[in-house]
Length: 505
Ligand code: UN1
Image (cartoon, rainbow, N blue to C red; front, top):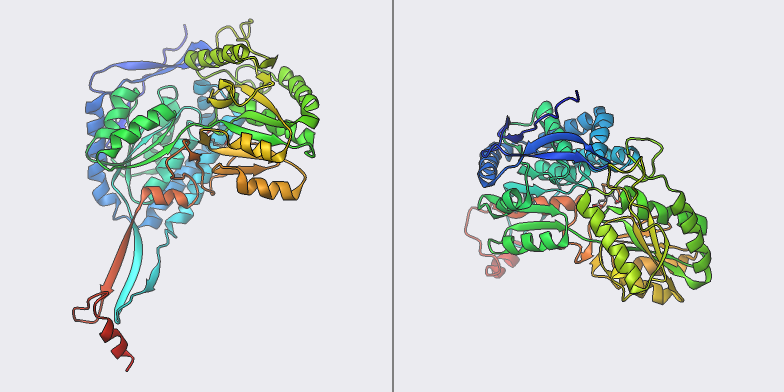
């Protein structure tokens, strides 16, 4: 008989606890729906309350631990991730489907983030600056905010929780994490790591469950100082609106509709590899995925043929099989969305070049598998050009001039990632200036950002904050300006201007 799937618990105040209602939900492998990975707590507002009060209590001590020491614990967690990388990648592939090579990369982002944050713990630089009055000293320091609610997505189930949690902790905050309901195991693993390396009780807390019952109370709780969210634009908008009334700080990372420009002078073989990797890696389920490919008319027919040939040959299957190149859609809903957009594309008059169907053969029938899909002759009016699909569906658009390509690239509600393939250095620099996205690639795909640079998007992708890089510290800390007057008398800034001059007499 098959082993009964384990039941996983919430992590609150350093204890693994069941939710108050006793309800659980199943976590299912999208490559094989007969494979139940485990049952997780279907928590509610009272569980969130418990986690927030644990985090609030722990904050009073944690904020006083010197930042280099806090950062050392984060580094220990990174080393724990490194030690357990293979098992963690395996669990992540099993619960969200992307191929092992990619979940290893996902865990690697966590390791990179830890090592980066370790260094930041010994920097967190503020400034010292001359004061305008004599015998007075001025400086700035970063201060933590308090309890941070981290609401994390399923497509990078390890990387993105670490992007939020690690800088938050180094800055001296305590956290409550809600994993996406589709990937609670990976965050459970991360939190187990935090427990093993010895974070004090209540510094890291995790509550699993749905958006309405867990996510909403995590945003509305009066003791939560900050919400950091990665996910859909519609949920991000709700969070932004709900937090606005209390002026809570909010970091949002949302949609993308990223485009690659392929100029007529580009190395087409190089561009081909980049577009395939950007469009079909992670089954197209990255915020940074390439979902529009803008191709110069002179090379359009040829490049479309090259794309078609390679996309057709991609091996789709269970990501645990090392030879597989593209895993399943993450769940039935995402698969439905992908198939709906394929129908929309056909109705809009785009040419279906390859793919378009669910895969239902013997190897695929128990999972949410779909063919890598390419539409040609797409134009800017079509919904498949404008709307985020979050699946392996690529829209290819012809253009005539560089200026037209840039206009198409920027004809988008979102502004996360943009790329150009060209061998003309002048065009490359013009594109770096004119592409209106937070990430910009020259002769490289739209995916593959590195952790020590700021990550985030313009326009409706985000709200101006960045994850990654030292810029992440700006979200998770407040600036305090400090003045020390050692003159022994009342000095009035802006008013005692005469006495300043007299000092020099
Ligand atoms: C995401 O898709 O939400 O740049 C994150 C990349 C990865 C992270 C993607 N390093 O594609």
